[in-house]
Length: 295
Image (cartoon, rainbow, N blue to C red; front, side, top):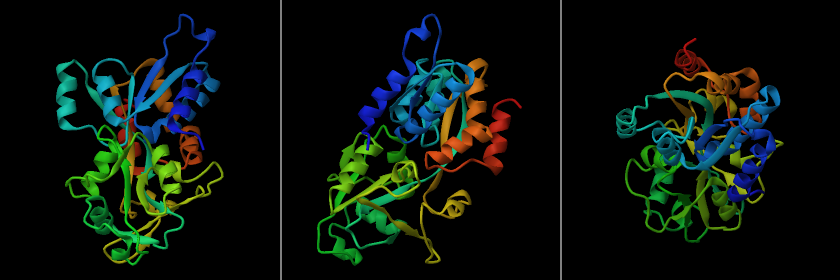
């Protein structure tokens, strides 16, 4: 399993080289959840068009800040841009335009040694707020809970805080990790662990759940337990932690930036999203994307 650091090193190598002399690369920065997918798109786009794309992670907040400061052509984000970020962008002469580029079933993961299979959103929130400190409170083993989450510049951190914690604070005991890959590795080696990652990190290239972890089913208000691996439940929004993943540009994209977005949203691009473990956009999201592209 590649760590995020290794992945970003690979990304730099993949887009570097003498062929870049005198050529401006499209700069894509931001969400760690999206970084593997963005790199896969960049590699396929290079094969198809000969155009190079530089992809780096660092978190949704980092990507949006780079767009605002003119250091990125595209900001990857696993959350929607905040009103205060839009205000700051406009003060800098930047007009953020939103594209939903994939759909994620955000996963709550535990060790595969944990017998618990399903929790409600409220129970997950109580875990991450530090209100439930031992797994036996949920019918599990008599074992203290170890929390693994993201740092505050992460869009997934923000989404989880809003939709699972009810906009309340995370427990101070939560281990704040730099990326999805680090959470995955930590949970796989800690029988007491619980963490959260994008669906694309849970499955391998063959669509199998990675060794050492178990994605929990999330119970709905009706008592139905839905898995983030249930494609139709996620696409239909029935899975409680389904979310869109976004890219932002400065104004209606033009030139190579527009070409890249059109490629990502094409059948071929969305097939790559599925190969990376995510789900394709459709319906209202697809229509909004077309309008944002000026089509």
